[in-house]
Image (cartoon, rainbow, N blue to C red; front, side, top):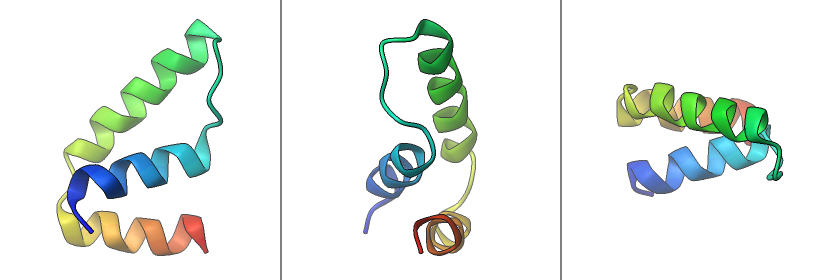
Amino acid sequence: MDKDHLIDLIASSLICDSNDSKLSENLNNFKNYLQRLNLDQLRTMSKEFIL
């Protein structure tokens, strides 16, 4: 699984999609945080949040 797919998977599992602008801003901030992580960190995080 590539990094972008893991980021989308983690973000969508934690924050539901909504038209709320505040929620949208938080999702973007969270995705930016995830972008700074390396692939191994993302894999570990996905195992913890998705399972």
